[in-house]
Length: 68
Image 1: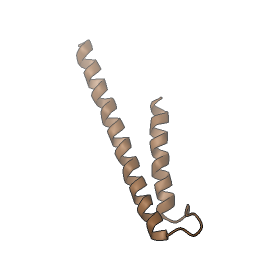
Image 2: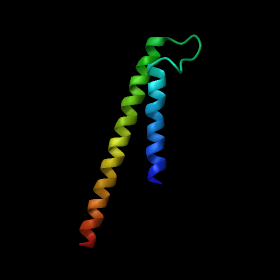
Image 3: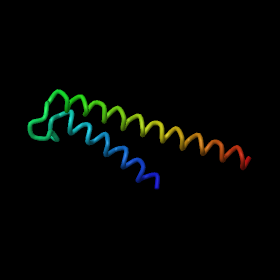
Image 4: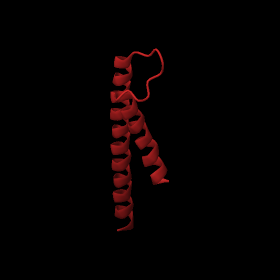
């Protein structure tokens, strides 16, 4: 289940990269706006990966405290 969470968040980063470099721009779209969306997607995806990782570590530490 963790792999699915990381993959989903990673796909967001990949979509952001595609938008940033112009490989996923719809016809008649503003290239500058798509690059901005790309940066937002990348930052949001990275934020989600880091927040999920830290939440998992926190949960693991709490479980270790309860057992010990």
